[in-house]
Length: 218
Image (cartoon, rainbow, N blue to C red; front, side):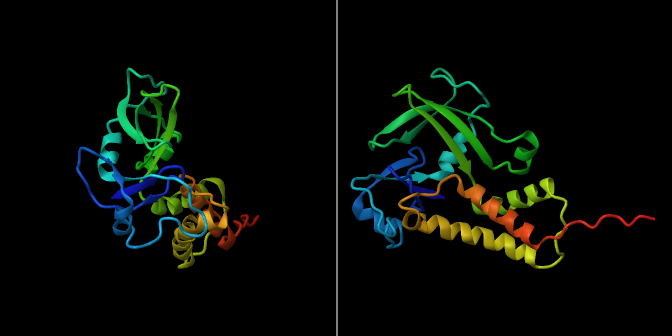
C-alpha cells in the first residue's frame, strides 16, 4: 500500500507504486488528481497556505522498519537509518530503534502494531516518535474486545449485536477521520485513530452487556 504524506498536516492518502529503493517521492500538483481519484485533498474549508505532498511506498518502508533493533537508547552511531519529510519540505535522515509501548502479552496479541523512537542525523535535536499501525481499522475492535475481557466481568449477548458493534466502530472511526478537519477546526486524526476505534468498540460492548449474576446461595 502507498501513502501521500502532507507536510504541515500529515494527511495520508493512497498513491501509486514507485521505485522500490526510493520510498519517498514528491507529488506535483498536476499528479494529485490521479492519486486521489479526482477527490479534493483538503475536504471542507481547511487548507494550508503553502504545502508539499510526498508519496510513500508503505510496503517498502514497512519492510525497512522490520530491520530496526529493539533499544531504549538511540544515538547517531546506532539504529536503523531512515529518511522522513519535515515541515520545510526537505527530507531528513534519522536513526531509529523499536521502542515498545505495550506489554509483551499485549504485543503478542497485536504483532503488527509497532512503535519506534528516532533521533535526527541532519538535525541532532530533531526527535521523532513513529507509530506503525497496520490494518488499524481491524485492530481497533480487537483492542476493544481485549480490553473489555480484561477489565470487566460483564456478560455479552450471544447474538449478532457483537458483530454489528465491531463493524460499526471502524465505520464511525472512518467518518470521524474523514471529516475531522471540517468538524474539529482543522484538526487531523492521526495515530490516535486506533485508540478511538478501540474505545468505540469497548463502549458499544459495555452498552449491550449485562452484569454477571451472583451465584445463588444454597
